[in-house]
Image (cartoon, rainbow, N blue to C red; front, side, top):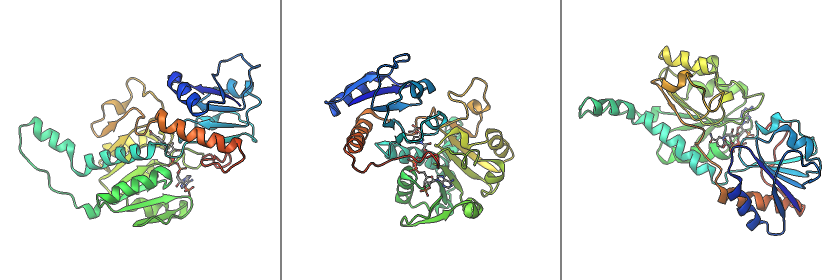
Length: 308
Ligand code: NDP
Ligand code: OXD
């Protein structure tokens, strides 16, 4: 079988080496433009250009080196082409860690303590009531569920919102647009772990964020396209929201002069909440690719219609 690897902004060498070890029978090569004669059966990709699809006309399936497929689905992709994304593959624990870092930073009031430190004050902030620190997770999928477990370990009340109902122990499930306001009005900390689709784009807007209780905290570790950035800034500046941790932005890297760089209530990280690590990702992709090739069940298939 022939596999072509096309990942922008990635050092391809460690991936190619690990893939060749995992799939010794396969001919694996780095995709290069204008080599339309070299047609592969499978693609392993991250944000490929449209030319990739225009030239690689014999592909049976593509494997996305990431959980989110929003960038991929911007391309014109033949409807028959099967698309497989990563499910967890070492990302869920990283995401749980990231969200816990942000939740604890807020709940344990680290910025206030840093300020006291700079003022040489040995002063403990008033303890927040944990039972009132309900964490609402938008998106109770692979990552959202793992995050819910981590939060429950530290006894935060957790609720979640998704398209279909969920049965996760201790997590109240809210479903669809009709239950969104009820869910938001109870979320003292809001965590976004939704895929970016036409339905979820701009979901973190003034109207929805205003439903959060006064003094709420927002964590967006999903996609920049979920957040209307100016609405967040207005709600932070008007004191409705206490702060935000953002791993993603509408434009990445964040452009020079963007208000997020220096906003005192925003913690910004460079889209590294959960990274695709070569070992676990290659293990999952090679297994799914072999399953698909053998006509067996494949996990992580993406619906082009739903957009995730
Ligand atoms: P999943 O597909 O497993 O979960 C998505 C969840 O969102 C599901 O619960 C789904 O509901 C819900 N959902 C989707 N559309 C809607 C909608 N219209 N209304 C309500 N709920 C909806 O994805 P993952 O958990 O694996 O990943 C989530 C996202 O996290 C990725 O798409 C990616 O954008 C982002 N990500 C960010 C990373 C980072 O480093 N910042 C790293 C990895 C991922 P249902 O279960 O009913 O289908
Ligand atoms: C992903 C990401 O979607 O890293 O996997 O953002």
